[in-house]
Image (tube, rainbow, N blue to C red):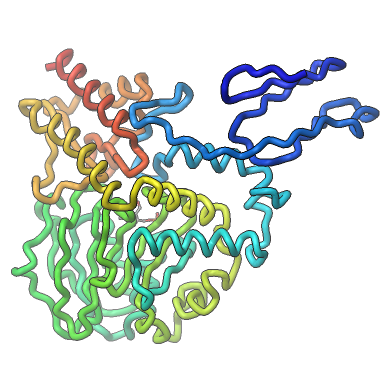
Length: 427
Ligand SMILES: Cc1ncc(COP(=O)(O)O)c(C=O)c1O
């Protein structure tokens, strides 16, 4: 017997047993077998075909009752509509009879997934033909080593601008594989600034200039990019925490890399966009898994890639395109960040953001409380209101709200309303 329980679901009851099945409107075309019937009845299993409908985007002011607003720095919140789409395709991907997790990475189904992910990312970022796009593993941390291993020889000088902890880690790892210099560091000012480009003394013999486009822990973001003055004019950027949050002119870079787990997918996928003419000169000691040439020649399928993660990134790219592309995404991100920074700046010092205004991150908003002993209470009370992961990174303390692409405006509005209420009660 079938009964509609809501516009989105159907309740099926087996009149002979207490078996019920909930079918949701967005389920994939699939046969649904009732395995919990007695063995004698299994061959009479109920089989139903549902048609697929587009998974709808929840309104930006919506919060599902069973979800929190997750302000984590990464892994981070993902678009709800794409999580639901993944859920509907989890068991049987588009009639293939298997989950993406069970597919051969060399089969036609997965090839179609990775190829579409790449072409959607190319469309989103307008990536020129002369750049390769790689879906790798090992996190952005692996790229700290892979970049010098692929782009320099052991004695080559390279320049690093260090605007926070991630840039510092990249520099320290590079010391093992080339001769890096820190040409500017924001450490003495607690990483609250980006340098003026005119004053940057770059080494003309440096193989590349490395920056971290957005420092996730400190909340400083490059709003524009320095022109490399090295002979090869090579600029390299770690874009882990602002990847696909706004348009970027890829042609200004030799290489861009990003861990997926902030803006574009689950952890386990690392995206590298590299100019093809830079490939093929890796140092002899380069492990095969770090050699870009191997991955380019094999279209990221030299070994088993993080298939499910790549599939999820593909769904997110689809979603970003459906939103109108990165210009539209950027507008939403500016609006969310503005609301939050305004609330901090207009709190008469109750809240404080240490970062210089012109370089405040659209993605990671660090702030402190004037009465620092209230910070733990702030985090605790916010969690009770279903706003989680607001504690600042252990190295800097305070609070941090990460408001990546998938954080709805409603999440930021709710946080701001909570901040005002908290201030009224504790000022
Ligand atoms: C800017 C930046 N770079 C690098 C990393 C390291 O990434 P992974 O943990 O993927 O190696 C992170 C992680 O948070 C980051 O935010």
